[in-house]
Amino acid sequence: MATFKPKILLVDDEVEARSGLAHVLRAKGYEVVEVGTGTEALARAKGEWPALIILDVVLPDIPGTEIPSFEGTRDRYFEKPGHVDELLAVVHQMLTRKT
Image (cartoon, rainbow, N blue to C red):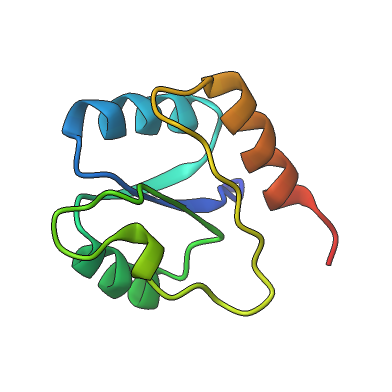
């Protein structure tokens, strides 16, 4: 029987940063969908229904700050380059919280 892997939509136009973080997230057991633009993020969010979106605020087409957030979500901000361990802790907390 396959185990459930929470899906994370990772949005960053910097390919190396995105790939590195995606690798770390996959190693922690998450399913990761990678995109590089705000337009792609909106389309994939509607089609993939990720459990969590990690979004760069500086994107080539739509600023991450202008991409609509859904009611009831909590925003967290990290500066790049950041501390991956801190980000992983927040990801875990957000995906395991009881609503």
